Amino acid sequence: MNIAAVIVTHNRCQKLQHTLAATLAQPFSAVIVVDNASTDGTRAWLAGQHDPRLHLILSEQNSGGAGGFAQGMTAALAHNPDWLVCYDDDAYPAPDALQQFTALDLSNTDSAAAAVYYPDGRICEMNRPSYNPFWHPRKLWQTALGLITGRARAAFHLDHAAYAQNAPVAIDSSSFVGYFVRADWVRRCGVPDAALFIYGDDILYTLSLRKQGARHAFLPTVRFIHDCSTFKSTRRGYHPMWKAYYTYRNGLLIYRLAAGIWYYPVALLKALLWLVAVRHYHHKRRYLRLWRQAVGDGLRRNLRRDPATIIRDYPDDAPTAR
Image 1 (cartoon, rainbow, N blue to C red):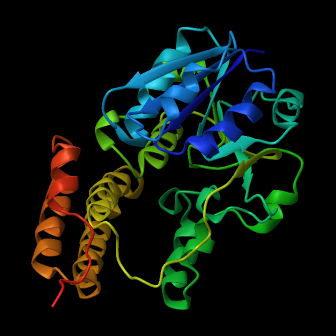
Image 2 (tube, one colour):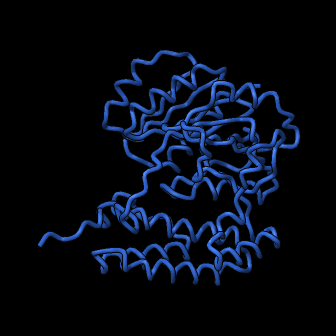
Image 3 (tube, rainbow, N blue to C red):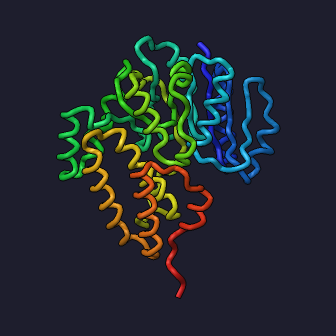
């Protein structure tokens, strides 16, 4: 079984070094590293790495996670793998990840999510796989109740018990940290939409394949480590502010795909919740302008705005000096 790894990096050279070492220690048939215009010495370090399986894509501009994975997955197909596996520069496979993966009966699996943990062994919440509640009436009801009890997220994400299983567990969507997908499905359905830039590209992609008939599974015995920060800022809202644009715009695209006949009520509710979030920002007029653009673009499915312009127009929301 030939498995190609696709890693996207941007200005995290130290973490990439650990990730690449852990990756090359396993029998991947090819390793594609997409450098999204790093300026921290990543390219100089990569130039000194010599492994025949290693293939570099050096982008002249930061195309975000979506653009990076689109480039990397396209390049990986040229090496004729059976499977691709995607992950970030701060994530890496456990020492036995490929051994565990190849030992499984995957005859009824087209794509899969690894079990992702923090380095200290705790489950990584941001990478917890999920169900689309709109496809499962019971989970939709539980999610609706969860909006009242504060447990909405738990209603459509895998519980702790799923991580203790040995067999694959059917799911609908997952992140791009430890995401396995058959190369045939990528050839058939394409790569993630690079115009998404960041946020939601993984959920949109996995849900889209699932909707087209792909059988998506959680693999509790295949472990990945995500060495990301668990620090929670006391600041409310998105910092820098431009991140809110992509969260909102791409979120509406996800709801359009996931919610079906419920799309417009859900979109209205989310837009109103995002609107009242203006109270968390010092530059309220700037935030309201972002809100109008993000919601308008999401509803119209407009992905044409230049990320450089969004980043320039909506910088960090630090209080104005007096």
